[in-house]
Image (cartoon, rainbow, N blue to C red; front, side):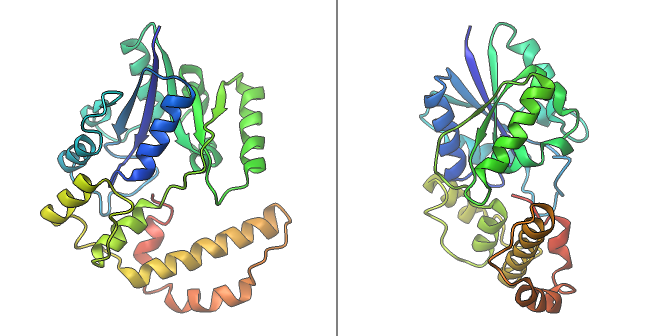
Length: 260
């Protein structure tokens, strides 16, 4: 029986953080192989600024070249309509009949896991490996994990890594503004993006990135104070003023606010 890792995502573009997460899961849980599985039309994200399937596959190939322990699964590209993880995993269970499937996600996805389509069917068909995020309380994430373990008899494990994933949205915006991201992307991936002129004409530019930062800080502050009853160190009255002044201008950001 083999241990198969699956790392799904838009990979728009694939970045070093994805590679580190996959490699850490591979080593820590002694996986035989990790497959990068690009989404066709992810249900929780808009298609704004999404490059073509062909370009995303090409970037993946460049990123994992000469790494025999990595491969690509384009199963979701072959399905019509939106991609739902529970459907994909049920199909993969038929493909890897005698193998264990380890589905790799970030802690941010774990926090929003209840919004996924049929999360209990996902948990029934895979062992979940959760990578930490520096901007999320590990205690909070652990509580969510424990709830699913108890309610669904799920097998959910942590990837012990301190590597921080950079928002792919921010990576795209840096590229659009001509800023170097060579420390965030594999060099062949960066070279391909520049050669093809990808992400040059995004809907939102650098000013919007600042607005996005304000919005995230506001949502985080409200969450801490009103949901967890934890006083925030950020004075929300200070944050709201510059944010309110730019909300009308930055309306496109709200459509894919949490896209990564």
